[in-house]
Length: 483
Image (cartoon, rainbow, N blue to C red; front, side, top):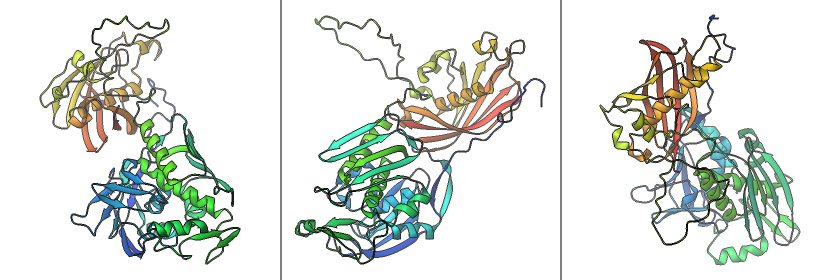
């Protein structure tokens, strides 16, 4: 152990970040569509990182695709329908539940009709397909969305809510309008509990609904082979119930599938009373809306919103509360300034970053070349942290060197036009190493190379040097969001 840095054992580390997953190999299945009654062939294919889940219609010209996202939901009568550009996919919830339950983040679902096969009315066959295909970890991290505040919806007799929770949990009460077969179940959703406790639960309907469904051209492929029918107090099924609470468990299965339309794994506790596909997808949209709002505690790279300009008027000025805070904003960044050969002084840096002294860790950008950037932080004795780190032996904290790498990476990623005006959240750090101490008077050179940029996620390798010697290094990942 070095005399100048009495490190605890956790100071040198590699942060373990869960990886995205896709299928190891393609797999296929053929069956009957629930509503159309036609034979359908379906295939699950591997997909690259950050591509998400998407349906591909192989029976149409151009093989059009629809991303499994809440924004494409167009109908929720008895099932969830996705539409894009005139192309539709019906009854997607069971397939999506299988992927979400198994922890598959990227895949292509190919079908040669407008709905997947219904199989036995559960997600068991789709879960089997995923096990047969196998899973493979991908290099990019998976970043779940952690619900930050409760969201509540009331739609007729349906009540839906989601609360902050360290994981994904669903508590559900199911019943028909007459209160028959009221069931309750609560489950922490993991790949293990999904496969054992939910994936086998079959869809069901009440006998008096069948005439309406047939009259509206639905359930042409429905039978006791793929659904449970409840007639008065009798349960009609071709096999015994798979769970004592099979009805409510299937409702939870639907919730898992519909909430996967958020586009990211969700950490939260869902509480549902008489859920429906309409309520499930509305909750998914509300989660997306919350996710897109800036989080107060997030570390951001992009600038705050531009100040609103007020037109002069004859109206008296609105009275300002006595305890109102004074907010100082900065102008929108000149993204075009982040170009090859550019150098940026501290004022230009502050137009790109929201950070201000003493947390601004970049004094000057020295060089930008392609996917590489070099910046300077002049470490002075006036830095406030030197008063306590350490008295009589001042050393720049390693975490602030890591922050410098992250800030410089944020500047480099601003050169991409699609990132202009967005918030970049510092998501993870890997392979972090602190090799030598940094003292007052040192000129800290920060070199960062963007190694991967796909969609809204960027990954960069950074190195800090003093007098040409490496003092720290790390690989950082950040994700961009709309404000």
